[in-house]
Length: 376
Image (tube, rainbow, N blue to C red; front, side, top):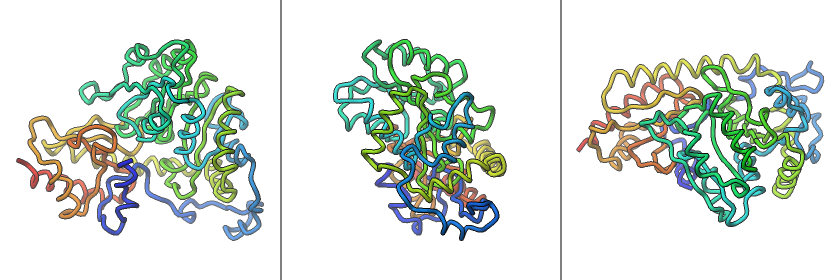
């Protein structure tokens, strides 16, 4: 997928000065988190030496699963399946539910995996395209018109949305749940940015119905993608057992040390998350101020997460190939071009949570300068 081939880690971080392509908060070190990682709570990180590196619980570390379940009303630890990142949970869900020819409805734009995995399986995939002019809002009625009762196997949405940062409202979420229940489909809700909602978070979709699967991870909101810890939450015992079987076929179990650390972090999220949110909202305000002071770009302001989908205004004539070339070569700035998300390259994903404030400001200046250079 282009989003992987052209990712900053593949391009080489050393080639980028102002990295505005990342879709997470700033990467953390363990020392940044102020955690006591010892088994008895009275030691240091070195006490991880005592952790037995055996095959772990196939569902995932019990402490971690308890912490995930605590984030949703009525959830039990056994409703949680820990996976190697959210990507593995998304992959396991699609491959468990879909066979060649099975019908699926997926919202687009979207994180590429949510589109490409059903395609790779050979599913009968129909998309509901979101539009800037509609504020990137999902019209549930459009989804309902595509869903085939008794035939549609999967309805796939993301909230907060990647790459736009927009959100469903509560009524739309409940309508999607009801649609899944009435049609016999499963609602897959990619909720990776839920902990970075800028207002009041929606409930986990999985708390509303056994027909819903909620997916999230430690990567985006906590800045810990190197732990490779994500999860799927599902209250349907039969479906949950199928997801567990899929995980066992792929990895058997997760990395014991990763899950142990993730469990400590998530258990302490009431302390860890607020300063991260404050930092994210400061960065969002920087982008908001920049956009208000120019007439080249526009966006629908994100309601959650650390990314937004920016586009050139309609009256701006620009050579997009030159824009991206000059942006990186001349200004050391990298963003996620629209083709990563199956839209044209007049759009780009702007990640504002990962860079430092200085890098963010320099990158925004670079965007303005590169755009001026690439005008036709």
